[in-house]
Amino acid sequence: MYHDEKGRSLDKAKLVADIASLPKGYSGSIKVRDAQSRMTNDTAILTYDLDETNIFGQELHARYHETDTWLRRPGLRSKKCCVATHLPLNRRRSHVSVS
Image 1 (cartoon, rainbow, N blue to C red):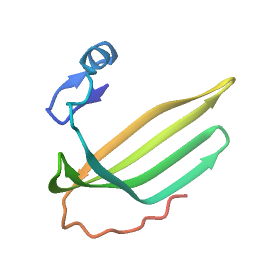
Image 2 (image 1 turned 60 degrees about the vertical axis):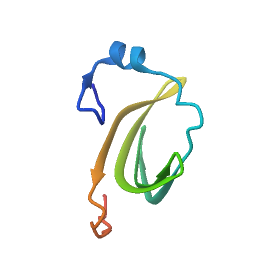
Image 3 (image 1 turned 120 degrees about the horizontal axis):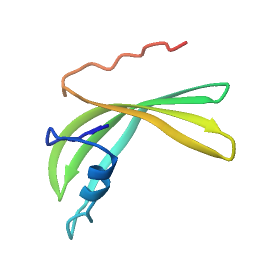
Image 4 (image 1 turned 120 degrees about the vertical axis):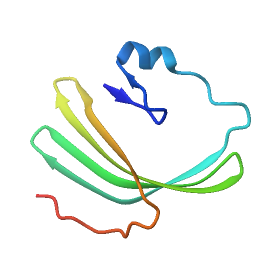
């Protein structure tokens, strides 16, 4: 399952068919903040904030929080889950302990 910023719900086939090159001249800036990771047995979890500050030279401000879960399988490592959440700009950062 994939849900995009346009409100669409896509399965893998539709997501792959929707992939296109970025527009000519595309530029932007996204910084990773407050990254935390946990590893147990064959599972790794990475959680972090993303601060987006400009696109095509236009100043904008957007924040996202993302959590990725990876599982190790014999011979490869595969990403099993990714959850991204758009955050309000005035949200204060808080640290939550994960155990």
